[in-house]
Length: 159
Image (cartoon, rainbow, N blue to C red):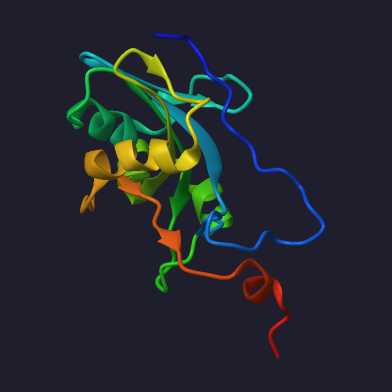
């Protein structure tokens, strides 16, 4: 299993894409992380390559409980406010591991799974493999749901 894989990143465009081949997901305001899962071990790596496993013990513990041999999940660690919105300020203020249970990782991609680098597999194929791993979970690691939307409509300013 690779020590580190760079996450797939969105491409900046002038207008949102349109058409059935595009998917949309919630834009969470948190820390982008890769969760590396191996037998009996989980590591949490930032986009910059730092090991933050100790900062997110509940995510690491939950990752070790997933029904996978090896995997690398790509997601966003967040804290939700009372309305279910991510709050980056709340996330930054959590000083104690005892409060770590408030942190959730919304996984939106599966980069590596059971010995295979999946980054060249289209996102729809990676999601088909990720969804059964995380479906219905309400623990520290959850599936980032896709949003039914039209790119142009969702980008239109609201009054």
